Image 1 (cartoon, rainbow, N blue to C red):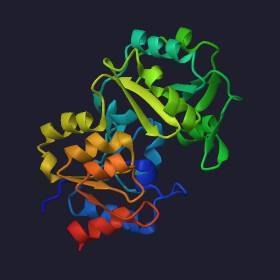
Image 2 (cartoon, rainbow, N blue to C red):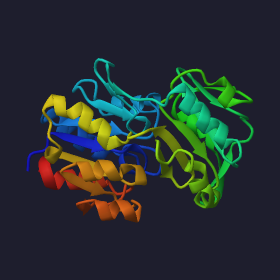
Image 3 (cartoon, one colour):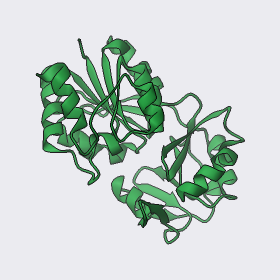
Length: 279
């Protein structure tokens, strides 16, 4: 089979549970690029939280692409050129932020070097039986400085790629439909983890961003292989000619995928690539 590009989600896919790219996965992906295959990272993360992994994979050398904010922005790693961007308008962003005030969630927005929150001390959410400081996790992951704003809706005066909310997974399951109710027909509202629910512009997802950017490059969907594990990877996995779910993926993604590989802790990416294009 002909593979022109490999598309990778980051958390739960490219990274193991220690948030590392394993040596075998790194070797497989660098070798693929040396063989002329384009590498694309596609994540709900902000762009700044993806550069480190692009550097580790030497993507600058090979014109790799970063698809950030669940498809709201695409940049070329070598030139830093913005190839695609579609943000929520100021009015749309304000509407979401105002609506979120009635829910028990931590809301996070970013601009340039800063991440803005209501309260840096109201920051813990349950995760795998423990309490994690989600604001610290997000700010460190994106290399953001933190800034408190009592009224995020009043503060927002710029188009925004994504509005992220975090909360107790059980609470989000009970309330996400109410959270998205005013926006379900006009924005993209999606879980990116069981403790994350986020809002992006209408029609924005990883598949749309990929289609918009790759078609002018002459790269066909049938010649793509995409790896993912979460709900926000479903459109991407369906779009690619070969859609791959990690063993640790949510059931809905496994149903959408063409095949299932080993988990993110078992070098699932390298395992499948070895059998397809690197052997």
